[in-house]
Structure formats: C-alpha cells, structure tokens
Amino acid sequence: MNGVVAVAQGFINLFQTGANVFLGWMKTIVPLVLMLIVAMNAIIALIGEKRINKFATVCVKSPLLRYMVLPALGVFLLCNPASLSLGRFFPEYYKPGYVASAMEFNHTNMGLFPHVNPGELFIFLGIANGIKTLGYSTTDLAIRYFLLGLVLNLLSGWVTDLMVKVVEKQQHVHLSKTMDVGKASAVAAGNE
Image 1 (spheres, rainbow, N blue to C red):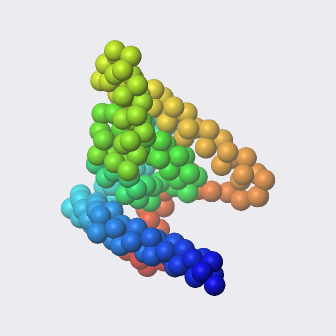
Image 2 (cartoon, one colour):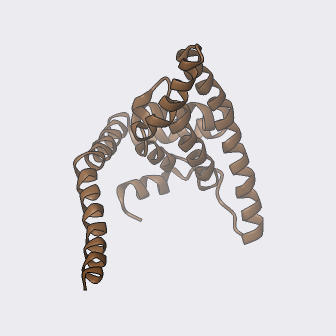
C-alpha cells in the first residue's frame, strides 16, 4: 500500500510543480510579454499603420533589411518572444524567413544585449566563462558572436525562403510576396 501512496503522491507532485511554474510565469514573463505587445501596438498606433506597412514593404524588397536590420531592431527593442509579432507586417511568403532570422537573433545578441533573451543567458555566460578562463576577452566573444550572427541570420532567412519555395511547389500553393495593406489593416484590427 505504501508504494501505491508514493506513486499517487509523486503523480500529484508533478502537477503541483507544473502549477508552481505556471504561476511563476504569470508573475514574470506573461506580464512582460503583454506589456511589450501593448507598447508595440501603441507605437504602431502613434506612427500609423499605413506608414509601418509602407516601411515594411520597402524592407521586404531587400534581403539585407528583411533578415538583418528588421529582426535585429525587433529583437533589440521588443525582446523574445514579442519580436516575432513584427512578422505581421510581412507578406505570407517571407514570414517564415523572418521568424527564422528573428529567433536566431534572440541568441546571437546575448553577449551584447542580454536583455533580449534572459532565459538563455546562462548559455552565453557558460561559454564566456570558458573564454575568460583561457585568458581571452569576453567582449571580443560578444562582438564576434553578434557579427557572425548577422551573417548566419541572413543565411537562415534565405534558406527558409528556399524551403518555402520547395513546399509551395510540393503543396501546389502560392504565397503572396507583396503586402496587401488593406488586408493587413483588417487583420490587425481583428476584422478578419
């Protein structure tokens, strides 16, 4: 009987631990993400959605802007995961590439801008500790990680675009490469 009780207690403890983690998130990350989304929507409202869409349309035409500049700005200003919400300004064809690039920027910015993804700071700090032990500068590591990240994130976006093209052919679908400003405004307003 003691074994059955121990299994039952272990089973309940698993869910209690999950509930405690969930409550921790409700006190920390959920309000942070909510406030970042509110701030982003306020900035968009102040600047004007038409201007943002125009800017996004210009940026989408250039892979350097699409997969280097916009994700870097989004990650720096909005952090992880709110930076992904900027993808709403991209045509459907380029959204997967933007997400791939932005997700990688959440890692490659860690050395210079630890605020972008503090949940994974321990990874960079572990590597930095090893570099420091070897007698090298962690600043050099952070800058090199960032610069290499710029190039790799650009490549990630391009490779994702190639995969989208393959999947389009395989699935016999066509994703738009241009932004329908009217449709984007309707989606942002919740009318669709």
